[in-house]
Length: 377
Image: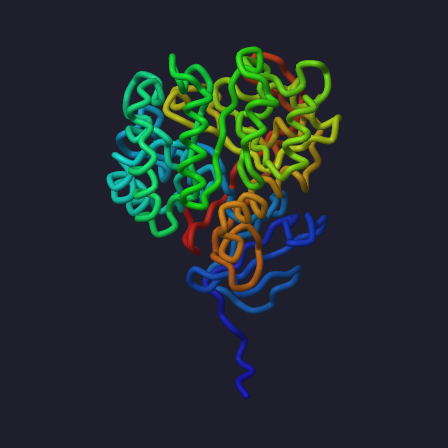
């Protein structure tokens, strides 16, 4: 029997660790060989070629950003995921409609295959994707069901579902009901879910929008203040709650206009937490000071009253499950991909600001370390 201690490539230790059964209040470590996690625990005694210790940090799986705009070309919203998303701790990201059927192959070769960041696509219902400056669904001739179905069938699983934004910025003068109908036709033909952006309910009621959606479809932009607000009456709209009861999922992104403290606090108080949290990071954020990050968005949800475990679950295990990647990412377990990050709270509370200028005081999360496939970013 060989009793020689195992030598790992890397051991990372932090003051707290997110384990599958919850967030610990004690130090924890992960050990890595190659691109796999090979040991997890409070005390890993074997030696390693390199050891990193973050006594004030929180050790997490790599973050999963369910709605952003990773794209190196053919999208007016696109950003280089390795330059702008991966350093935040985002090791997996889904594109909300940056590519459509006409640009899918270029997106596969130019963004998915070229990126260290793991990228999945919710393909745009419009064949042009987000390439044109005008609303992508403003020309219904672009909403060709057959070519979208063909693109999905050629995707080898890299296309998760269908992105459709029925808002005025997404549809222009097109009838949002027809836009939704064609997106559902694509989704039904391929067995894929929707990533759905809502319309102003004063224009088209929440009840009418939610009724055609199916269990497993994901509604994004969920904690906005305007032009749609799921808590406009002070509590979660009954049609929105009924949709969740039927199995519709809800994502809370940030972006430039999609996170309101008031809406978040009302929804959380009314027992309507998000399924996933996402950045909606896109090109307009590149010149922001301070810049948007997914950890900053998490800090705002914590300040709004969402508990720590729910916040971290919504950017790790839960989006991994929804993307069908739970056997590979989303938890720190032996055998999983060595996608890891360490976040740490700032020492002093700071002023956090939502997209409408409302502020709350909270501690800000910052990224201290990122590993993708076992390699330090």
